Amino acid sequence: MNQALRSQVRTREGNRCEYCLIHQEHDSFFTFPIDHIVARQHGGDTTLGNLALSCFRCNSRKGPNIASIDPLSGRLTELYHPRRARWKHHFEWIGPMINGKTDVGRATVSLLAMNHPDIVLLRELLIEEGTFPPVVD
Image 1 (tube, rainbow, N blue to C red):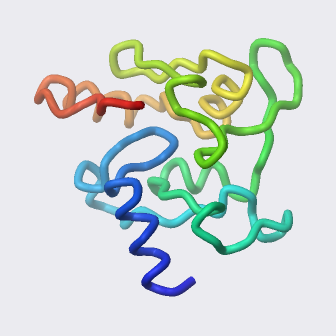
Image 2: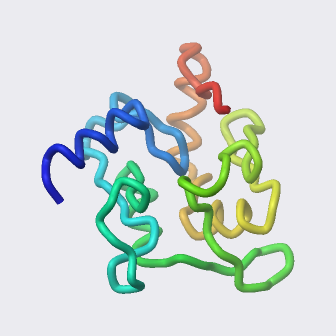
């Protein structure tokens, strides 16, 4: 992946993780990696339409997965696809917690551990500062 493509992904998303919506400036330990939404091993290509900016936590939990188990129904469910779906359709904020509103949302929240205590604590602090959560369209 060339630098121009990396830059396009970062600029498009405003340096914000497309899964948990944390901003790069709030996670200064790791530079956010670029995620292949559909991993190359599953036939995904390295094009702008298949790339998402993701924080280290979400990226490492997602790995090459394109599906997981919906904890409510127990069914295999596709994961949230940032190019095909709108965040607010599948997720909502309940204070510092991300709630999955759909099977896709629940499976994604579960697999990516989007409500891990460490990230929830960070979100609580950012909410107190008035810098979180971001407005989502």
